[in-house]
Image 1 (cartoon, rainbow, N blue to C red):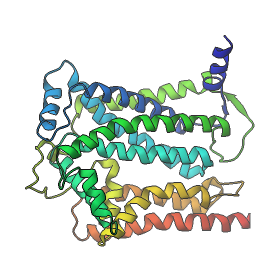
Image 2 (spheres, one colour):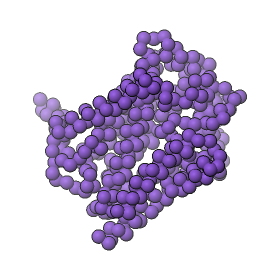
Image 3 (cartoon, rainbow, N blue to C red):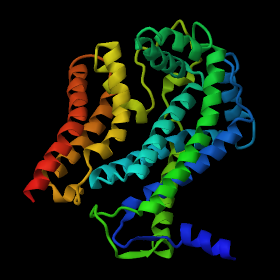
Image 4 (cartoon, helix red, strand yellow):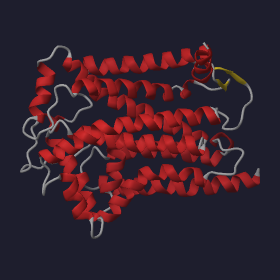
Length: 368
């Protein structure tokens, strides 16, 4: 009974700020998305064959033969989009209120980085045209590393080109990484319980209420809305978020006219291809993700951090949101002018935000 009370106090009756809104639902939604992705992925492993000459056919077998396996596969594919949608909304909220608690933010950033890697590896597994050439483009970025790039690439491929050995490696890491993510999720939740939840004001608030039942209902409503959106895609638009080129078997001799990753990678893909230099593009690609780890250092030692208290920063974050959406849209378009020039401007503005936002905030803070 004592252990039950302890668990209840730590997970159910934890104190939370009384003024948090539905924007605080995304953490719980992400946890549910992750668990369902893990379970559906384990089910798919029963039929998937990680070999270059069988992978594509095994996907068709999953879609046609075993009972309800088509639903599990479509659930797994579309839930990945729901997961990243909730992840980006979760990040955008924390960027707005400047909720950069060191341990919580760092573990969350690691979850984002590992989730991106896992999703990319999963995108390669169907072994369609876009899977193959997406893997070719991204893995070849390693050759931009001086001296050792080619050796690393050969080790990752397991051959001198992408083959069954590559697919087996990707399948292995796609299977292992979610369990590493699970470890960081536990650390993230533990850190959150130590520091406490943030709130819309972005400052300490002693007006607390119990998580259950006051916020559990908000979580349930948020998850039900996400679940209805997911069911709409699975039953009405099952392949809307999938690239039609990926319904063709991978052909190393035929390059698709327009290589396009999943929508949740498009912003990074736009940044990558906006820089003509290969090494520069690779650095920019990784920095677009690794910038998250630097943010706590740029926004420290300030009592008020919420953009609501800083009018100029409030405008900047809104422009940043629109810039992110524009980068995503540019990734869908071919590499030609004016799209190429616009992509370069948007990529510059993307990194410029992280430079000028903390400077303006510190200057405004001194004026307060």
